Picture 1 (cartoon, rainbow, N blue to C red):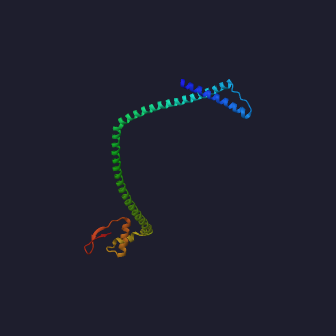
Picture 2 (picture 1 turned 90 degrees about the horizontal axis):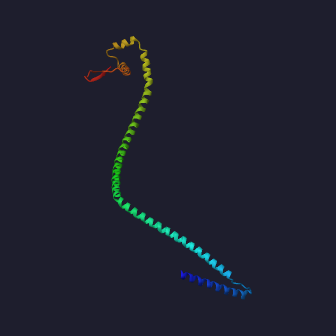
Picture 3 (picture 1 turned 90 degrees about the vertical axis):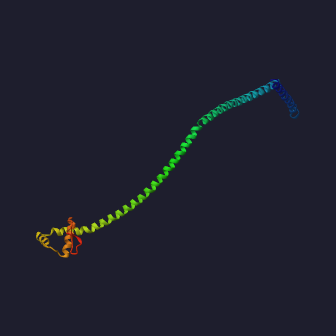
Length: 211
């Protein structure tokens, strides 16, 4: 515009006057002459023109970036408004989901409490079962030890039975009232052979096992 053009004219005039004054000072101090020719003035104008063009390009780039930023802000604002509307529309569903989550959490807590009780009962049963297993193993160990101790006597008894003759067995059968040592031996033989006793009354009238 006219104001800008007038400012440029004043500025160029000031440059020309200053260059002339500096050339005179240069001549006075160094005794050398510097000529400010029209070419120098034209070069000054060209330099100013180049600087002005670069400045205009810079300002144009800044303006373009500013316009793009404004456009993006408008798009963002529109998107934010749309998201606000979507959130308002989803708010009842979010409230319902929140209630459902609360109910689910309460159910989970209840089931967790039940599970903990069941775990406590199972742990107690496991302790009882472990104790019973330990006791059973102890009984098993005792039985095995007793079996190991009784096996030699059993083998000896079986060998002794094999040495009995028919005559000796007939003599034993003929005994109506065997001696106590003989009765004990015969009872042991019956136990080994699996012969069950008969329940009879003794002299006092008490029921006893009679082999």
